[in-house]
Image (tube, rainbow, N blue to C red; front, side, top):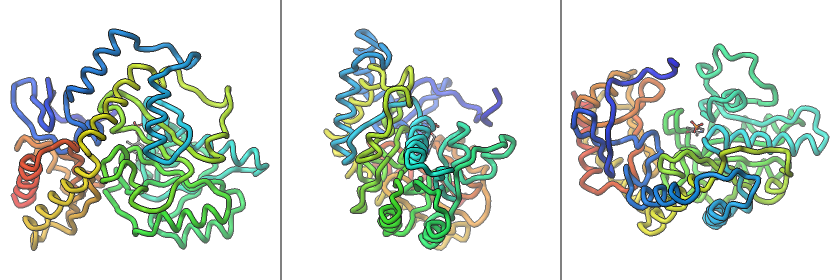
Length: 382
Ligand SMILES: *Cc1c(COP(=O)(O)O)cnc(C)c1O
C-alpha cells in the first residue's frame, strides 16, 4: 500500500558501509536502514549464523523451550542489568509489551485508569497503542479514536512531569526515549533520566525507556541509559538487535519482570531460533570488536569534522550527536537534501523537515567516516 514516498533506487547488494544499486552504482550508507544494520551490510558472521540456523531449525513457536532465545535473553540481561525478556518482531511490538506491563501493574493496584506519561516529539511506533504514545500529531491524524491512558509532557522538562505527579493519581509509568530519534536527535540534559528515576521512585511508577533506536551500541554504550548511573524498570529495543532480521525485545527487572503470567501476552514468531541466531551473532560482533566504544569515537570524529567543515555556514543551526546518532539541524526546511545526497551516492535521512539525521554502521572505518563527513559538508554547502 501507499505508506512510503519511496526514492527511485533499488539496492541489489551490500557490503559493510556500502550498498550497490541494481545498475551497479555504489553508495555510502549513512543511515544503515534506519539504525538497523549496525554491524554492516552482509556481515559475514551474521550471514553465516542465519544460513546455518535456516538449515537446522527456523521456528517451533513459544509453546516449547528455545535454547537460542534463552541464551540471547541471558546475554541481554547481563549487558543491561535487567532480569527478564519478552521477544517480539519489531520495535512497536516491544513497546506494546511495555505499555501492557504498565497497565497490568496499575490494574493490579486497583488504579481506575492506569496512565502512562509520554513525551512531545517522541516516536514509539505505528500500532494503535504506540501511535497514541507517539508525541506527533501527524502520526495520530486520521486514526482517532486514540487509546486512553496516556498523558503528555514536553521532552526534557522535569518540572512538567513533577506537576503531573502532583495532580494525577492514576499515573503508573513514564515512557521515554533517552534521545529523541525520529524527533530529531534531541539529547536531553545529562540529569534528565536520573531526575525521572527519582520521581518514579517517589511515586512507585515504572521508568520505561524506548531504546529501539538508541540501543545495541549506537550511542556508545550498549543502552543509552548506561551513560547515566540509573537503571530503568523496563527497556525496549529492536532496530539494531538483529542487523535486519526482524526481532525486538522488552526487558524488565524487579516487579516489572514478574507482572506477566502465561496468557497475558505472547507472539507466534517472537524470539524464534532464526531471529535469535542472528541477534546472538550481532552481540558476538559488538563484543568482539568493541563496537560500543567504537560508536562513541566514530561519533566524535564525525561531529567534530562536521562542526569544523560547517563552521560559520549560515544554513546550519547546530551540529550535535550522541555516538552514531548525529544531527545537522538547518535553519530552514530542506527535504530535497535526501535526493541530492542520493545523486551524490550517499544515503541520509532528513527528519522534522530541517534535521539531517545520520545513523551509520558501527563497523565503518575512519576513512569511511571522513568520506561521510566530507559528503555531508559538501551537500550542505551546495
Ligand atoms: C523505529 C522506532 C520504533 C518503531 O519500531 P518498528 O520496528 O518500526 O515498529 C519505536 N521507537 C523508536 C524510538 C523508534 O526509533
